[in-house]
Image: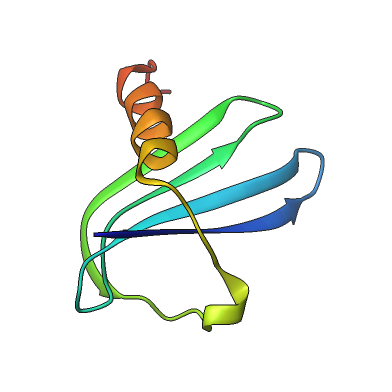
Length: 79
């Protein structure tokens, strides 16, 4: 698996990050959105969609970073 992330400015929330878990065929397996300033985490799994961002828009992420945020989001109460 490969892990990448992309940051973007979100009005009134600061920077939000989208992290992707991608398989060897460039298919997104899991994805999460994280807004550190507010603590918001949204999890998305079973996506099975191709990665469509140009390589210059994403940066490499560590598996540990993805798993850490995923685990927090998985245990957080859902709204």
